Image (tube, rainbow, N blue to C red; front, side):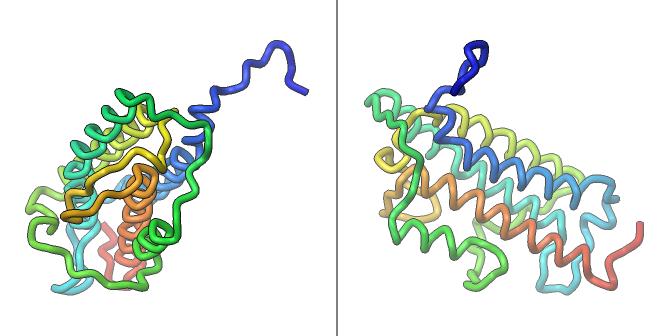
Length: 196
């Protein structure tokens, strides 16, 4: 029984809880991995062919910023069409497979196109850019609250000619972030990782 003085959260926000929870875990993981690292540590690479922590941050910011306009367009259309639902997002077999390919540990290796390669920038700037992109993504989660995440469609900028459910794209971006935080963890666990 609900206490008379407690107002339950709107169902629209409740459907977004899984996404906010994943974002919160990613954010806590990132804080533990990135806070206190020097520019030398952020920029250190285990091998010439492997990315540094800063490179992973730069790549995550690049991907997120590339997706923001597509998310904005889909969210705007969803609200304009009153495409609302109080059902949590489940996803179909294809969407679950796409999300699974992004999840760590890496099972499916993907060659990163040149346009998605980490930008050359100061390591501390890469970390700051990633955090800014993460906050921008959180704002899109807030704006998507109440929408039918299975009905509203997004055209991903990295998948020409494909239209995916908004819920699939949000989940993919969160899984992609986990993938690269997992890679950052591997960099930090390297025996040769610099002390300062």
